[in-house]
Image (cartoon, rainbow, N blue to C red):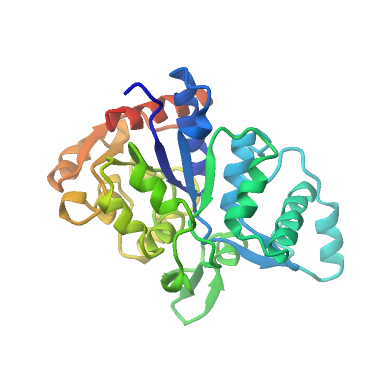
Length: 327
């Protein structure tokens, strides 16, 4: 392949941010300077919400900040070196959620976004405008321009916004279902289906399969595009050694009846040959014993180091994912 490969990554959350950085790093290691023309990231917007009159897009912002190099790497979200004066003032007024911290710099992003949305821009246009501030080295697309939040349903019928369940309760309240109101009537954001169709490889990041990748796949037309593309679809397991790397994906998986294992998540996505999504699945060295089980499901299994503890290892994982697709 003489031109730069066309890569599409479906991503959300901290795992998605680190993986996208790794793919960009792998491209740069190959000597591809204009990574923005090679790398498209379809970002989960299922955990978006309105709060104190502004529109928040946590996964969009996490990936944007990570690519810009301004993210708070210790917390995994928000801006590096941010302050919380405005958030404190909001709490004094009894506004917002006292357990949901909004940094001052982060609020600047939310205010700019909300203003543009109220002026009539779509989320796609807003994200494009945001991308002009920093040299991100990737094209970012929201999964849809429709407002599709995630609702967590508890056993007693209580319904909570995902952010309240995740941030306030730390996923300690047992869910029985996750819903995305409005997703059935949504459409993929402009460019999403086209990017998948034209891709040389599509990568499913090691993001939460239920609440990060799941909402993207729930947008009508996205699954069909993945099944129809001529590009290999390669996924990276978010489970290492039978445990989640970060967050509470195990609680989410249990709610939908899926075991916390690399093989079970591969089965959740399914083999493309059987109407699923995956051609290949990268599993950790700690899960090597599951390789045969994954292969038996019609998904090519590759054992690779999956820990993204620094930029070098993240880039190595990005390269491994590209190599698994033969690009």
